[in-house]
Image 1 (cartoon, rainbow, N blue to C red):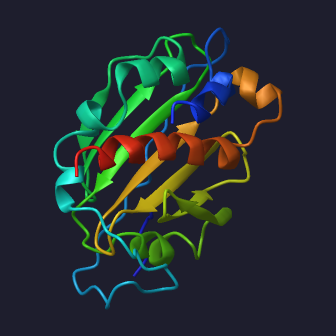
Image 2 (image 1 turned 90 degrees about the vertical axis):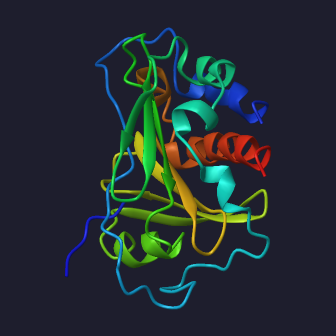
Length: 203
């Protein structure tokens, strides 16, 4: 069956994303996926094991409230839009865009409904992704970057916080970063690291 996959110190580099740029306004959100009702033993499909899992409570609630602080969003997007909350087959999500018109955007999804954690991306996304890159662990937690096209402007980072749970962070770079040849695969892990710091503070 075919299924569609889905410390601020580092962020200073995110003139990377961002403010003072002009261009078409854009958005990004993690690609949706349908959870498997008969999940295999975890981890599976080549996904790495999470050796020191975080408690499930770190992914409680909406990412609009807990994933990134207002100051962090300003550092990333300049003047951000109000977070737009949503809910999909994986869990609650939030999307922010830059009010500058640069096209920069960030979306965070708390993947709490599939009970497959990072394995879901390895199973559903890896076979068809245009770009797929297992990342160095982020603060000790396994992560992967992927994109559905070869355009380096946008990507999704998925971080496993336990074998059953993960969060994803979708990123679209702003016009300036794109014109400078920045790659979302290099910028995305920095943003995902900041989200993880905020989540660990909830443990």
